[in-house]
Image 1 (cartoon, rainbow, N blue to C red):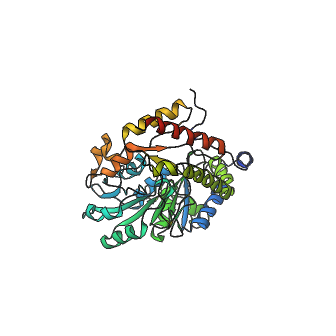
Image 2: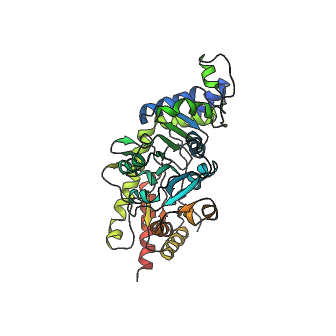
Image 3: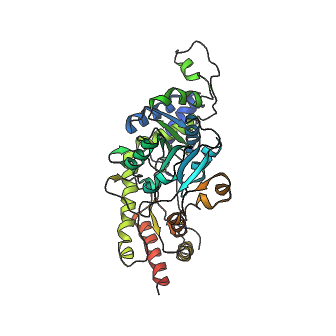
Length: 382
């Protein structure tokens, strides 16, 4: 059967076409124009960071983080293995060593109870990756970091409009990174943002962002010449991406409400299957304000997951699994090391199924996916 319900469908939610047309007519298509500045202003106001800088991807924002931390070869960065490759690559590019720590079985986030035993004299930072827009236990992570004098940075790629004890994700560590990839809650096609919370990084972040120059200071009349000051790269997105993103930002409340409604409909549909022990639904602690970024199910085994994915595809539903653990990958074994057995990471990776969730899905489509899951689980039951 051909796919009738795709895993993702990027949505136009407001004035995207109007703003792109305005960007073209302005004759300013390169980065750091009016639409970029308006996106920065919203991010700084909404998240409460000292500085926001749009980037062409979340990967670029993570790479800027690694540069700002002044990592040297052999320095270590603690992170979960259940993560996208960019989380590790950003630090490996600086010749630092990712140290993979297991995740919690409930939220699938970095297990804060295991971090301290992974710290060595070479540890420079802890990466708090907020899986599915559900926050890591940031108080505990910050406590470990403070005791050992290391930085905390947030991979909040999935975290826009989510919070931890009322604080927006990306605003808690010294640095944060967001994604606006077309699969995220707010999209720019490709895009991301570096969030600077520690004032010590603010001025240098802008220089790295502008290819290692003081171009922004010069444009503001704060420098008498435009020159090369530091390392850097081309991290700015075009004004076309920023224009699209601004239109999405203007509809953020509607987008968030719609995603949450769909997420809750899934969650209610699978309550009985969880009670019967056939699968596990997502867990969201009471102090975490999630953003309905992902709806996933955890199956008890790789075989059960494989069977469910096949059944859904046969029903025309494009569901997917998620990360192959970084610690078990070819590059992960080459560039990183593991702290402990990472048994939860392996089990979660083998059992997790992500269901379609996108703005514009109908209740009927959600119900169709839920019924397809139920049918598959019924067939698989002994």
